[in-house]
Amino acid sequence: MSIIKFSVFVTLASLVGGCASNTGVIDAGSGRYLIEQQQATGFPGLGNLRAEVYAEASAFCAVKGRDFSIVSYDETEPPYILGNYPRVSLTFECI
Image (cartoon, rainbow, N blue to C red; front, side, top):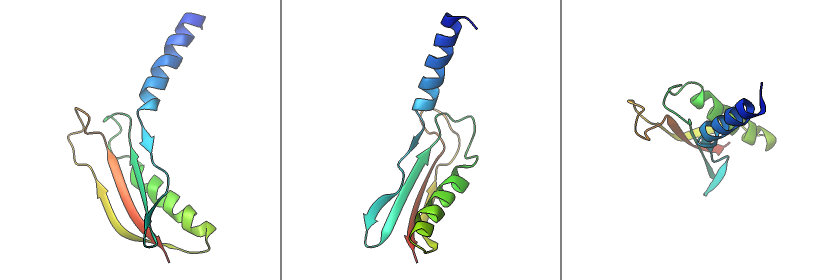
């Protein structure tokens, strides 16, 4: 692969990947925590977002020797166009 093609590939991958976001675990107060995650585009749909935030919450609570309990869960609705990309929001407690 030429250096120019490689540079274009890296730039495009950075632009697409750079738009995805994951807040990580945020302390929401009163023993509750929040995780929000959004896809970079609308093409993959919700895909594994739900599983990813559940796994992150479970791992977070496991470090504390506890299980997680869902307080609330929200996800975007299709169509996934014009900035309405797949996004999930999970509020949970470690019990």
